[in-house]
Length: 282
Image 1 (tube, rainbow, N blue to C red):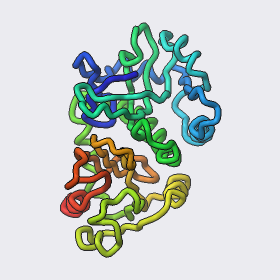
Image 2: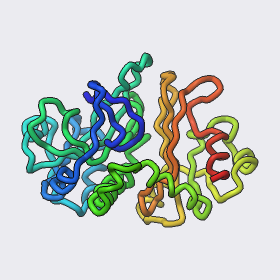
Image 3: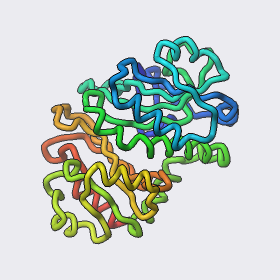
């Protein structure tokens, strides 16, 4: 289990339980492109993740050779630096009294590391709270894998971004949201903005309240006119922890907006009116 203070989505902002942050070095980045990426399947063969991640890798992955392995094989091979690994882990916040657990997808380098959370991450993104049904994130796996691949290429070509402010690099995209259509799921909106009329009061640009199938199709078609909300929240499991809100491009897999809030009665689990106002203001 990776214990982390998660400031943002990439390994650049992951801080492990010892309090030490890790930033991938130029050598790490270059080494990654000479590895074979081992895609770790979950132990339960009935899980939809195992089926979809295979489809996604065949469709999306093109920067390294890859192969599928079991978690048992992962534990044996992860000490070998000739391999990199795409795998899911359980992540918790250091000193978080809620004990909230999250599922993260990691792209990490193998090597002589005693614990998995010591393996250098090239990229890492949150999928969902650990207790949430997998259908809350499996339909977005293609875009998240596409993002991780694009990020690896980005930091290869521009390693200075890693040591500078990579968060600012992605936040610069927020200005482009106004030229795209924002896709939203009704169940991911808070009551104050859960209808077209209410959203129009605070957000004057193009948006649509859609279904998961519509978002899946936009990702598959690489629709350059669409951005959509990726929300990581407890989904009714009554864990008052953090709600992460990321807006992602359906074609370019860029992050256009990132924020999070601590869930409370005033700020429930979901996209807030304040979020729409930030988008409109920018």
